[in-house]
Length: 467
Image (cartoon, rainbow, N blue to C red; front, side, top):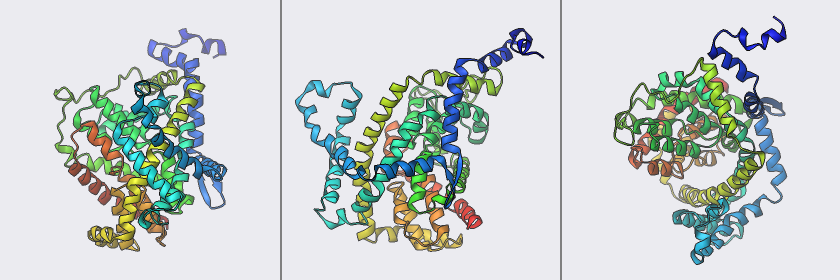
C-alpha cells in the first residue's frame, strides 16, 4: 500500500481504529511520547561502571552530589534555619500571613510544621557549630544525619524535582497505569485508577502517593477500604530515594537487581496484606456512606486497552504546562522539601538515633525477631533485627543503623525491608491518619509488622540467590 493510501483515513474500517491511527500522528501524541521516552531512558537505562551495572539516574545523582559538595552543607544549614527566623513576619503582618504566593505558603505553613522546623533547625545549628548535649551532636546521631545523610538527600531532591516531571507530567505514569489496570484490579481487588496512583507514587514520592489517595477518597473515587489498601501498599518511595537507601549500605553496584527484588516483594506483600485484617475489616464505603460499587473500575475504557492508555497519557501531557512553569515548580519543590523534610529528619531521626546509640531499647525490642532471622540464614541476626525494628521510626533508620554490618546478605535484606515497610512514623503515618481512611496508630503498627514479616523471607531468598 502506498504512503498516500496508508495515511488516508478512509482505509481505516471503523471510527475507533481511525481515532487510534490519527492520534499516533498528532502533536498530542508526540508531546506525550518524546518526553516520556527521555524519562524512561534516564530512569530505567542500565549502564556499566567500575563496580558493575547501575542506572543512568544513579550516575546523575553522583555527579550532582560531587558538584554540590563544596557548598551544600552551608546551603542546607541556611535554608533550613532561615524560615524559622522569618516566621515572626507572618505574626506581625496579616498581608504576609494571608499571601497566596507559593513561597509564602512554604515559609509560613501550619504552626505544627513551624514547630518541627524550629526544633529541627535548632538541632542543625547545634550539630554544625558543635554545641549542646553530646547525644544530639554525636557523630553517630545528629552529626551522621547532617554530615552524611542530608547532603545526599538534597542531591536526590534536586534530581527528582528536575527530572521526575518527565515521568509524571507527560503521561508515562498514566499510560503505564492504564495498561496494568485490569491486572491490578484482579490481583488486588482495587479499581484500575489505583494503578495510575501507584505508578505516580513510584516515580515521585511516597507522600505524594498518600496525598493522591486521600484526594481520590474525598472525591468519591475510592472507598475507605480501597484508599487504605492503596495508601499502605503502594505508596513506595521514589526510585531516586531507593538508590539513596541502597547507597547507605554500600551496595549500589547491585541496584538494578536489588530494586527488581524490592518491586517483586512489594507486589507479594500487597497481595497478602490487602486480604488480611486490619485492611480487610475496614468498611468498603464511600465518603458519603454509600457502599462502593464493585463494578466501578475508575477508568472509562474506550476501544482497545492500548488506545485508552494512550489517550490518558496524551490528556495528561496536555496539562503539563510550560517549561518555565515546571522549572518554577521544581525550585519550589526543592525549597519546600529541604526546609521541611531535613529539619523533620534531624528532629525525629536524631532523637531516634540517640535512643539507639545511648540506650539498649532497640536491642530489647528486637529480641523476638532474632530467631526468625536466624531461621532464614541471615548473618549477624541480632544487629539486623535492631536495624529492621528501627524502621518504624523512619525509613532511613535501618540503613543507617545497619550500614556497619559486614555481611552483604544482611545489608541487602535490611535495605529491601526498609523500602517495603512503607509505613513509618516520621511523615507517612501522619498523612495516613490525617486522611481519615479508617487507619489508627494501632492498625498502622500492625500493618508495618505484617509487611516486615513478609518482606524478610522474600528478600532473604533473593539475597541468598545473589551472594
